[in-house]
Image (cartoon, rainbow, N blue to C red; front, side, top):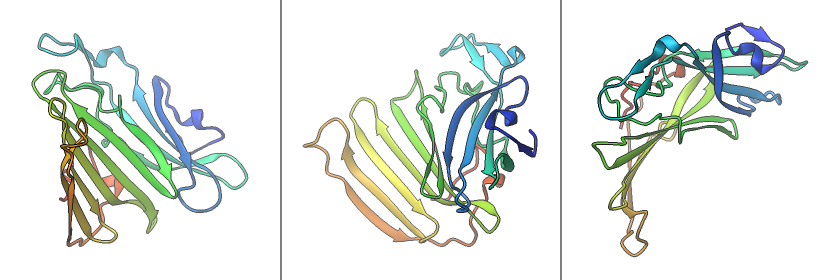
Length: 212
């Protein structure tokens, strides 16, 4: 991955492909920045699956790349994280769907949001959405928020947890139902949390336990 380039595709390594792209002004300099996720295309990372789930597991690695736009054109690499984006398949959980299938990459105002969805095609009725919110500050991207919602595919019951590390507040919503409006009686409780230090994007992996 080069440190600079003229167009976004210059940052996609040979033998890799772009699977997600978003843009917005992340460092507040008035110039559009880009965020992309790339995936390796090697057939050596495709593994036959003899258990439940897909016949073939795609274990190709993925990389999150953040590019800052230059005032007079071109881009420079601002951040590279090789560990936060999970692979399309999992050897340990072959029934797990690709977290990026219903995932999303976007910029809202100056905040980078990464959404991943976890659900199993066999063995579980639960669907979990995880959304990470990063802001560029202190010369790095820091995790300022984390939201996790879960719902049951049969009953529609929902729970939501929202962590705001900037305001040091945790809000939990229970009692919701996405299938039945009459049964949906969500109740939200907010409590203060202790935040000693914000986590940096460069330190996170897809397995990092987020503080609740």
